[in-house]
Length: 496
Image (cartoon, rainbow, N blue to C red; front, side, top):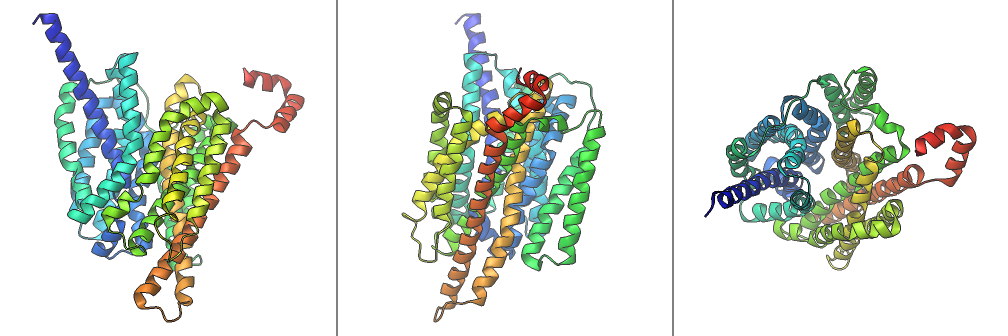
């Protein structure tokens, strides 16, 4: 074998290892957001957590992940992507081990928060490392396609895998499974991943902290209201603290020399609408996953494995739609496709919100999930496109980061708001028991009533997302006419 052939073989092998490292990291981070969903009822029984408390198992991860994501991306720019990637994966692996051994709610929530922090630093580096590791052309396109496939399928794999591990072994293995993967990545990364050049700049640490703590306070206020009521002192203080911290964040970003969130990104109606619609759409969808899991295991008596498999009709269709969307966008346009997708998802969510204690999986749950999968599969690509539309090259990273922030924050905020609906509906159903029902049947009735009410809240979230798209993203002839009359020159410049 010639030396040139040997060199090509070695490079090909190295490229495959690099791609495997990046894909394994992305899969691990995506999995961690969904693998606990089908495990939540068992986690609640193991650690004596109520449905309200269980929401923090999800929120502790998504809040720190979304809140610190832009800071993690900035750290990669300033300190080197490979270094930050390895630090993030190392911390994520350690936090996963701690979460698996957690024997109290407090230790589990702390570990989940650390996982979210670690993911916020590791995730932004994965795509950047992929871009510098593969030359532009066919090789890079193949790598990006596999990366997108892993990102899209990871959530559904997590639901099923979480169910399998919980049913056959323990919910703790949903955490432990990250440890060997993380160790292998840490061992391979220094040898196969190239370091990126550092740039000079500053960290906007105060901005990152105030935004994360502000959102956490708002979410805590909603969760506290679900258990203790809206007039509770802790609830009121949490909301006040959240508003003050977010106001401080906006002021800091206006004055910062290198802000973590350039406020000029919100000058575009289309981008603002995309961030808002994504937050609302993901909020409704994530909350539905949480409450439907409670329903499947508490009312239909599915075990965790079957509950995970029950979501396959939705996630399978959603993943398949990714391949159809580019052709549909070229035919109908991004905005029309986006509106159509939300309307389809809205129809599926409305049907699903009608579940009762006597609802069977087919057709009352399976068919609405398929409809939801079609709608959600259509929505995310054009919504992402609108989120980065028209940005300057220097703001491209921040705009992409805001798309991910809106996604993670939407998941936390939606669940936090609708857990208050769940708590209120549970108390109402408990106060009006079924006549002659056994305690078990009464508990099922309460859970089904509360789940249906909460999923109705998801319907409202999707409806608000549709309104945001129509008002802010869709081109409005009346608004355009007013712009031409009032500021014709400015408008022409904007169009150019």
